[in-house]
Length: 129
Image (cartoon, rainbow, N blue to C red; front, side, top):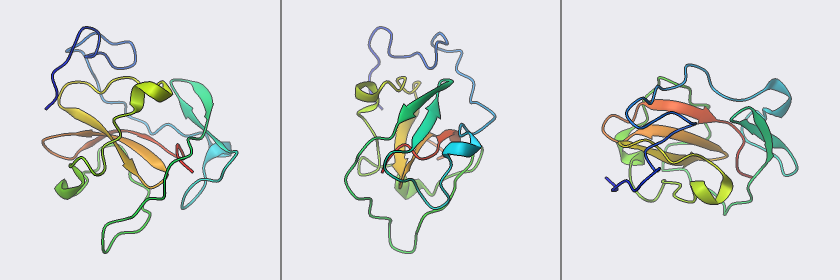
């Protein structure tokens, strides 16, 4: 687990210790791309549309392909390692994950996942192309 500095324990404007996982996935119909995203498309985060992020190719683990994960589902625990973490969240305007959570890339999507259980607290579809 990473130490938290001043202001890093906040998520979407909520004070530290008051994080509540969102009950809905964030993706408007006009920006969804089944099976992934396309260059030039956008995604919705914090109520605003954003351009997609160009990222290196994504290698799914053996036996996995694209799957549309949802809030409340649990990822297999082998995804909870640095190979899948997205630590550049501040470079792109994503809030710092609350203590005990990590942003994780899964193909074109960005997931906020609990470190201990793999439970998904938030999904942002189509972030990467």
